[in-house]
Length: 521
Image 1 (spheres, rainbow, N blue to C red):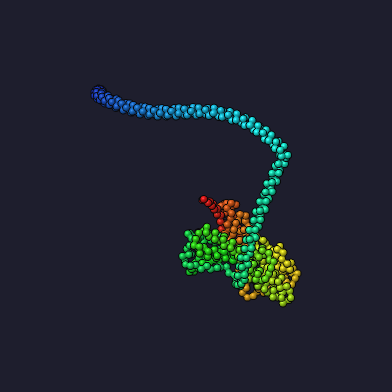
Image 2: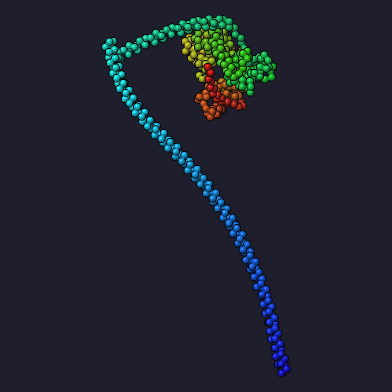
């Protein structure tokens, strides 16, 4: 027991001694570690202070550089603003000087204007005084003249006016006498020429009307000249004549196609003249076409006179002569209207002679029975009644008037002559090959097409082209502008669709052309 306690005590002492030794040794080692840690800490702190010092220096340098940069930018901006202010100040100073200069000029001008105004007022005052004196002088002179002449101012004025009127009347009468004498001289000369030409043109051929004419060319090279550059010549020719000019592979020939015989004849003669003349261009084409139209109008009158002379008729009014001449360029169901009327006249004359009636009245009525077909297309109504009204207007015999109006039973026949004209008309039109219904319908359709287009305001001319497949409308440029021309084409097309019957399509072309001409002298 005692040994155990001793053993325990010894063990405790040994443990304490070991603990103390361990504590001593551990403390010493801890102090050594603490010392090393302090050393390391000092080194780290020294390095950190060194790094911080370097970073501080770098940042200071960066800040200085940035400050210098900002300072330089500010100085530059300030310099620019200063320069701008100096420039603005300079401009302001210049403007101020200019304004001051102008103000001085205006002041001088105002001063001069005031001086001129004052002078003008003085001169106006002087003029008023002089005018007043002049009025007094004139009044005094008038009073003196009235005393000398024994006439008042109004009486003298009237006397002078009457003298001027008498002189003017004398001059006018003298001029009228000169014009009348010249007219008589020219009338006698023209009458002799017409009579000579009428005597030479007593024969007439009977032929069926066609819608084409052929013009022979000297060479195929002429075709190119007729067409012109980019087709301008042929377009000008077709526009001026209203006729289709067909140029194909047919050697040394061109075809003129159109439903109106008068236009076709104008086109044919014009083309022949152009080829003979050699100058083929749009202006020359229009000139030749207009000249040819005038020549054919004169030929129409001569043709009417020739027909009347051939039948031995007399006392025919000049306007009726024109209508008779126009028959040469009209057709009735493909039959030439003048040839048809001559045939009716001869037939009526023969039948009247057989019945013991007046052959001259029958012949006259037969010749004039279709003149209603030659009036302007704008006048509406049956051609028989139109012809009767024309005959009545120009003092034809009432029997002739009735025969014309009754030959299609548009009015009641009141004499045997009307029946004779009906019979002669039927015989002439019914003989084999005399007429073609389709041609007449075709012509009427084209005439209606042109008449419809002519009904629009501002239309100058209309031409049915391409066998009725195209209508060309030439408008007056002063009345129709480009925008309205487009609208007019649509309106004409709508009217054609609503009022006509036709195969296929009809092309409506509205042409607006303005020309300015000046003469250099």
